[in-house]
Image 1 (cartoon, rainbow, N blue to C red):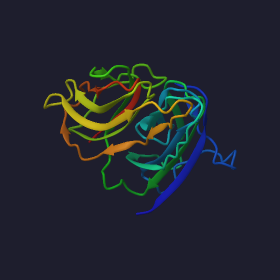
Image 2 (cartoon, rainbow, N blue to C red; image 1 turned 180 degrees about the vertical axis):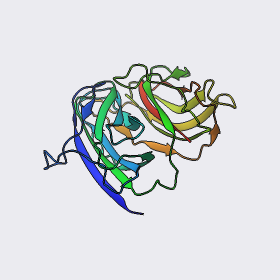
Image 3 (cartoon, rainbow, N blue to C red; image 1 turned 90 degrees about the vertical axis):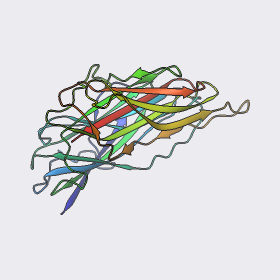
Image 4 (cartoon, rainbow, N blue to C red; image 1 turned 30 degrees about the vertical axis):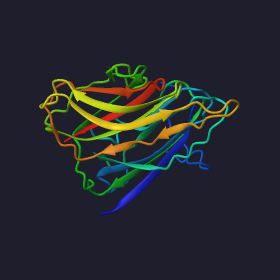
Amino acid sequence: MTNFYRTREGALTAIDTRTQLTTIGSQTAPGALLVPGSATHIRALHVAAVSSNEAADQYGFLIRLEGPGIKRGTYVTPAGAGGGSVATGGHTLVPGTRLPVNLAVEPGQEILIVAEAVGDDMGTYQVAVTIEFGTEAGPEGEILGEITVEGDITAVDTKTQLTAQGSTAAPSRLTPPGATLLKRIVYAVGSDAAADGEVTYLLRLGGDAIKGGEQVIVIGAESYIDVQAGSDSQHSHMRPIVLDNLDLEIEANETLDISIEMAGVDVGSATAVVQAQFM
């Protein structure tokens, strides 16, 4: 087993706009990102993304892998979410996060890494992605497909279905042919802290795809209280979180409904990005 690592990074300046990552810091023209000759799979992505905190809003990130190097076509995953209540201060430090992928690739062919900010406009963003290639699939096993959606939640105790994908207004939400399990979820959520309150975030998985009926899983909690007059509030950021080994039985070729609900006392508007992976 041998691994290979290839990295690209870049800046985003608008929401719902696809931006290809083409540089590596001081390397402004590193050339095409080609699948290494002995690689058979993308085992994982290492991602880090952050906003400039120039607005009192909330946001999320999506990463897209495109091009002939991906055997089954485009792959889309969340890469974080966050927000803040002021536009005049804040400091955010985001560690890189490894996300299991296990996609079959075509050696010698090109892969494009495309980043996209969703939610509300926070100014500018910096995003970096490392592709971890391997000569075999990772221990998590090769996935058959994924569904990735995002959206804004604007009221507490209100079930909000996620149906968009940034610049793709209505992505497919059909489970892959041959799939029997929803294996893992990757997600991130964050609010603009526009109101004093405290909430928990609930993920709802439903639709004809889920054999056992709607499943509800807690995915986080958030609170905010206004700062002293004349002070600035910190911004918040949630890196993408992996819920592994969910092993929910599903029907292939059926629609999966992915919803988020804020339960508790309103903290403002939130943006959520969620991916379901199938085996």
